[in-house]
Image (cartoon, rainbow, N blue to C red; front, top):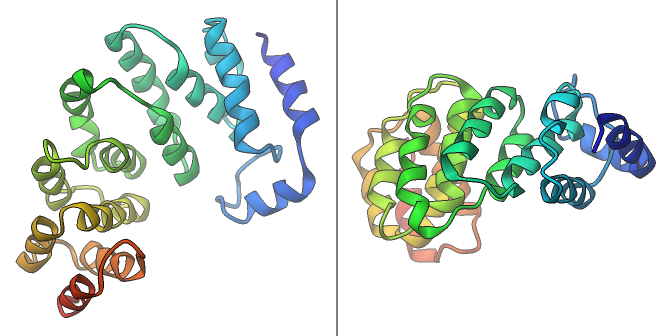
Amino acid sequence: MKSINIREKLLSLAEPEYKAFAARLLPKDTILYGVRLPYLKKIAKEAAKEKSFELLQQVNYDIFEEKLICGFFICYIKMPLEEKFGLIRDFVPKIDNWSVCDSFCAALLFKDEQKERVFEFLQPYLVSESEYEARFGIVMLLDHFIDTHFINRVLKVIKELNAEGYYAKMAAAWALSVCLVHFPDKTTALLEEGTLSTFIHNKAIQKSLESYRINKDIKEKIKKLKK
């Protein structure tokens, strides 16, 4: 699957009205065609089925949809775990906005028996001071690791977050609000410690208060914990 064919396909699928809508949600300098996510996933799945690894060298990573197709390709390609980690390592530095990050993380699935190894792989990102490296790590936890086995480690990661970037801290707050849905006692205990940064602490409470999945009693309790 050659790059020019992908570009022509994207241009044929572009919608001016959708481009205008999407552009309002992304950084102002984002270059995009205006193609909806399901089409990008379909193109990536076809490339992954054909094992078209040349795609990763041929696309223009400065263009939003072309970058996302490469991300989805990495998600969908069937290959040994350690080899896929290599592709992920190459891709993560190219993440420069929340949309690419979150779409990539949501589609990056692993088998249950691989989760310990994946958690280990994520460690450098979880302690990174880089905004989008940290967001990648945190959103991966948010999407795939908020469960009984990993919850204590997830909360510890958020408590010790190093990154100062806005989108990393917002991911941490978002993750805490989801932790509160599934593990209210453990998450409330962390908020009660008061050890989180004021920004993450208060944003986590704000997101939790806005959630329809958290009951009124818990909301009343955490409302009193605002800094």
